[in-house]
Amino acid sequence: MEPLTRLAEVVGPSHLITESEQTLRYVIDERSLYKGRPLAVIRPGSTSEVSQVVSLCDEYDIGMVPQGGNTSYCGGATPDDSGQQIVISLERLNRIRNIDTTACTMVLDAGVVLHDVHEAARKQGLFFPLSMGSEGSCQIGGNLSTNAGGVSVLKYGMARELVLGLKVVLPNGHVLDQLSALRKDNTGYDLKQLFIGAEGTLGIITQAALRLYPDVPVYGTAWVAVTDMEAACTLLAKLRAASGDTLTSFEYMSLPSLEYVFGHFEKTKCPLSAMFGHHILMEWAILKEDGQGRAMMEAALEEALNEGLVLDAVVAQTSTQRQSLWQIRESIPEAEKHLGGSIKHDVSVPISDLSNYVTRAQALVNASWPDARLSIYGHVGDGNVHFNVLPPINSHSERFKSTHGINISHVLHELAYELNGSFSAEHGIGKLKKRLLVRYSQPVALDLMQTIKQSLDPKGLMNPGKLVDCREQSEYRS
Image 1 (cartoon, rainbow, N blue to C red):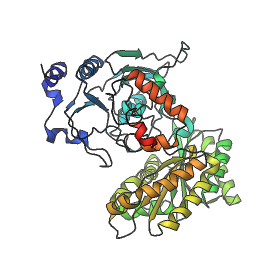
Image 2 (image 1 turned 30 degrees about the horizontal axis):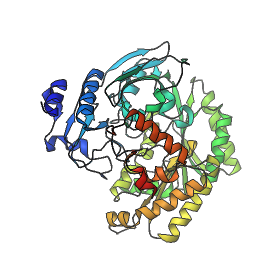
Image 3 (image 1 turned 90 degrees about the vertical axis):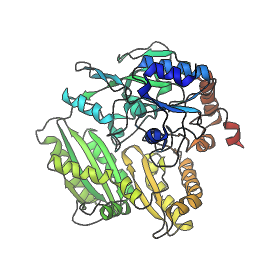
Image 4 (image 1 turned 120 degrees about the vertical axis):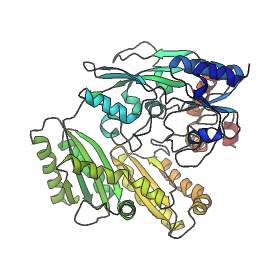
């Protein structure tokens, strides 16, 4: 019996898709960098079905590409063009199975959309802090598989820190069930950590137990202009101390990034009375709406204004105002896309070196590509800056990116490495950054990753060509 026939028997014929028109949305990545041609797209509806699908793929030596919301910036969920890989979409695994309001935990399927996680928690008076621009389409399994970051890492950490347990289908079809929601379970290796950030190369996450928090009654939100990046970092430390470390977000935006937004979205205006070179969108939790939490932060901002760190500031007075401020921040990627896209960089350095990095990076790009446009923004609170380079005005966008992209990225990644930083703070590796992983990883760490991959997936069938591909590393090292 042919493998596709047997696979269709597992999930039902309607959930095995082979027509190219119907598979299109599964085979092009978020940035349209890659377009694959799969043998089929399959949509299992349970962990049991995922297990059976994986077992059959293992039997027939078929490559498997796990896919959530398909929002990867690095091609991490895109099949190749061989016509020999199967995309395993988890979109039907979309049940929230349990919310424990006493323990503040949630157990759910991997295909649940992140926005729906937020809404389900909120209805129970709880809060799941992982938040990002793509939360209306990204799925929790993909968030965990890429160890997603987002805008609340400053307070709550990366996705890894929000996971209590996982259920994972291994490359041979066996199911690792560590779905426990225990806060304490010190029984040997913490195996779930192997699969968080592994980008589906070691197994397929099908369920997760997540850590929730009591919902914050009120947030304080402010838009602040600062003198420069160094002032932003100084202000961050000052406000964390003044607020009792209740800051949840501290987002930086350069003037050019905002000008792209205001130029593309005509009804969007700067929240301040004048435009400045450096802007911060900050948010903090007010646990009790007694006025004290807001007054404390406003007093700290006023003190920073008197010291010259802050040039101007506005504090949101309503939820609508808060949403409008966040809308500006979240619109930067769309504005860049409207201008022809950018050469994206997702770097992190120690917060104390952020100003040094941005200053030197600007000088390096301006020296060799003086007409290129810059868009610098990101999560200053955790040292992650998106230093994006746009083609010059009236230039051919794709030609500029293909001609200069590798050299520009090399310069910016080398600088991050020099400052003990990372070339991939939150976007992952996927197809796009495999060579960078080899270049910048310590040999011992890379060898250990390869050993784990070889041990769990000796045939190399699980998300082949992504992250650590043992068959390709010798080529990259040359």
